[in-house]
Length: 375
Image 1 (cartoon, rainbow, N blue to C red):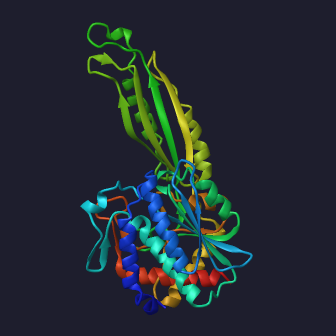
Image 2: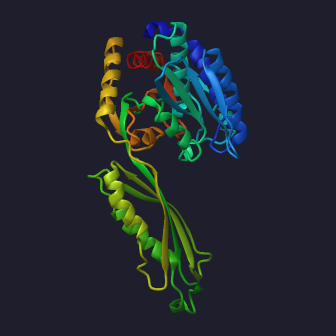
């Protein structure tokens, strides 16, 4: 099977080059919708049925269907990237030996190419599956999936399994059977402005209070539990000689279980001021629930591992600190397997790249897994 897929590598790289050159930063509706329009044509050429879900004041989503059957398997892919338009001009798609480079190539346009070639292969084989396959190509995963989440959850509830084409664990190629949940919070500290030289006693520094809150929040990190809290963006004050009346911060939370989220989140939301004259307000919550390794997901991984063995390579599993749309589907109790996309490294980094030889291997893995769970 791998040798058969390898014969399509030039076409896969050609499609991948085109996808990278269709820049699609989150929130750029015009650029993103152009990619969706092009991809809908590719879906039709591969034997699928494309449906563009029109956005209302936001980018469009693409829902594609292959095959038929009363039951369905859901593939999740996102097309948005963290790279602004113009990045491809600075770092164009290029091949160096066995590696291909380009903005968004690893996270996760290569996963889209893998899915399309796997489904095209199954169509050419007369569709041996007894289930239909639905693929969602979404526009906002990199910003928390606020628009696509209801669509993802609706399709997941109709599915017997969810396969996520996010990249594999870097370098190792391991699949992801667990992911941390992600929380996002905003802290607003209100103080009292005053002249820092002639009347400091009349002021109440919001910056000082925010510093105290930052130290307290970071102290809540518990590596043994897999819980991390990071105050990542801060702002406050107006001038050096003015006691700051306002300070703000954005806070990132990562947790491995819902039980841990339920323990920690009230502590974050319940922060109170320590500095007299200041007031602390915290808003936010859990953006993505944890993807906990369930019995059903473990069974799905075992099937993938069996397919890999039949193809002549070993497949491992791992847990990721970042979230994906698979977090949503796993939280609904749907067996979800993540990291089926490209092998490579450098997500969100300037050296983002994929391993070209692994493209054929991962495509063959997806074909075999779809055949196994589609019966």
